[in-house]
Image (cartoon, rainbow, N blue to C red; front, side, top):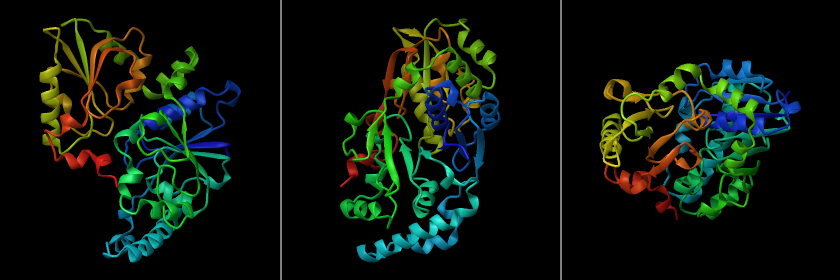
Length: 360
């Protein structure tokens, strides 16, 4: 088996896995394995491109199963109305779920020296804890815990008790609280309201700054299926001279989502009183058909992480706009607009997206 494996659920996870490997000495390239979960993301032919790159020893598909796949777990999730009996149910759920996942794990995870998991809140976290396999956790997205601390939110109310139980492997809590989680990489500890003792700061900027020309070439070859086509679209300077990039996200229902991005385009398609060319980069999990709904604008392929655009030579936008995607990693924009919670209050109940304000 390889000395290390990365378990990824999104394109961003795979991107960070590649960055971490590319920052190793070249003699170590090809030693690690990459495991791509199909539970919440369609990776397309990323597996084949990653295999051709030579960066990984092996790339494995992972048919990860959600808890709803196992109907026998449903009774263990019911609220009994009593804290003690709820915790007993949760202990049983944690152990049972971890065992039920066994047939779907495609490799012997116990054989690896280091396991890196980007989203241990997903079923893989339960499997590793149930089988007493140590692992390293990594933040799901850049500074994502700053806006949504899933461990605290999912376990609000008696969190101290629940964290104590998780540290003894009685129940499972993600993001550094599991007994078998060795540590958890985050980009910036200083922005987190409730830092876990296992958090370690690993700025993502350092990973990108450590890339050389060969590393950049490998990254592009893995994540961009047709580089010439993408560069052609992005280098086309016909039409308005000002350019705005809008990063979409799988927010709300489809109808509300369309309204959100129509409003964003209406507001930000003007740069210094001049109408700009609008380019949309759909989120990989966004199912809204932007090409059909916005035929007057350019819509990029959604099957790559937006961070890859940093590697397109000469790329420049006057403005990049996002709702919850943290734009700090973007280096090709003169202005970066993060709309955040106040903006979303107009489109849905605030409690839906203001999770950290509900932690107690």
